[in-house]
Length: 451
Image: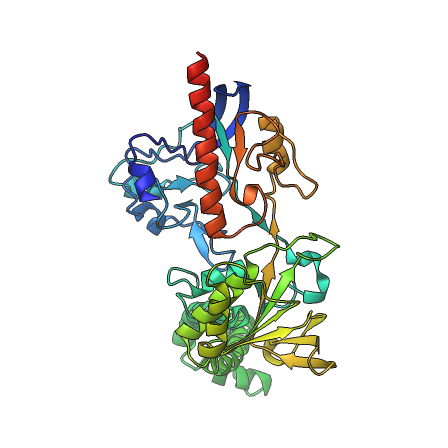
C-alpha cells in the first residue's frame, strides 16, 4: 500500500465514492464524491493525539465490534493515506453539542469542522471494478446460534483475535470471558465511587457502614436527629455496596479461572455449498481455517483444533502439503461432518451436535470456541454500483462478465477482478488484477490509436 501511495502515476482518492459515469470506452467521465473527513489530510500527520483525547467511544467495525474506537479515528494503523477522519454520526460537535477537544489537542491544526463534501470529475479511459466481498451473515442459520451464544464467532472475528493489534492483542480469549473482565472493571469503578459516598456518611456519623446496616436491621441503632435524616439514604447505599461487593467476589473467582481457549472447532461452508443461500464453494475458506488453526497453535501449543467440513478443498500449489502439515505439526483434526446444531453448555461453552461419519454415530461435544467459516458474498451495495456503472449482475449478485473474455463486464471499457467477479483466494485475485490492468491498458491504447 505504501508503494501505491508514493507512486507518481497513481492518485489515491480514499474515502470517496463513484456517483456516476458517462461516455464510452477510452473516453469516460467519472463523477467522484469526496466525502468530508473534517480533518485536513494535507496537514494531518497521523499522530493520533486527537483520538487519545476524544471522549466519545464508538464500536469498532474493523475489529468486528469486539473493541471501541473514538469518534475521530483512522480505519487501521497501516492505512494509506495515514490520516484520520471524524465520524459525523457520533462526533459531539457535528451533532450540535459542545466539545472540540480534538481541535485543541491537534498541534498540526488539521481539524476542520466546516469541511464539506466535494464532487470531482475525472477523465478516464477504462474502469476496473475491485470492490471485494462481504461475509455471509450467520444469523440466517439459527441452528448455529451465532446471535445468542457469545463463544460462536466468525472466521473474520477470529482473524482479529489472532492479530497483535486486535482486541485481544493476539491472545485467544473467549468473548464471554472478556465480558466478565469488562464487567469486573466497570463494577470496580462503581464500587470505588460508592465507597467515597459511604465514606462521607461514616465520617459524619463516626461508624462503619456495615455496622450501621446491621444495627439498623436488628433495631439496635440509636437514632439521633442527624442520623435519622441520613439513615434511609445511607442504608440504601450500604445495601447497594454490599450487593456489588458480593458480585465482585463472584467475578473475581470466575476471572481468576479464565484461560485462553484451548479447544477450537471450525465449521466450514457456513452459507456456501448450501441450496438455501449460496450453492457455490467460496474457494478460500478451507485454507483460511487451516491457516488460523496453525497460527492459534503457534500462539499456544496446547491448542487443539477440529475442522468440520463436507470435504477439505486444498486445490492450489502446495495446499495439500500445508493441510497435512497442519494435521501433523499443529494438532488439527479433520472431521468429515456437517454440524447439525450448536447449543449452550456449562460456562457458556458451545456444544456441537453432529454425525461422526466414520462411526455413523451422533456425537455431542463441548468446545471452548467455535469459528464459523462464512461464505463469500457480494458487497451489500453491489446493485447500486452496477446501476451507477451501467453493468449487469449474475444470479448470485456478483458482477456479470463475458464468458469468452471473463474480465469484461457487460459495458465496454469496464473490467472486473477479484471477489467482485466471484469468490477466489489471494493468489488468484492478484493474477486476475494484473489481467484486468492489462485489459484496461489495451482499451486506452486502442482509443489513443483511433484518435
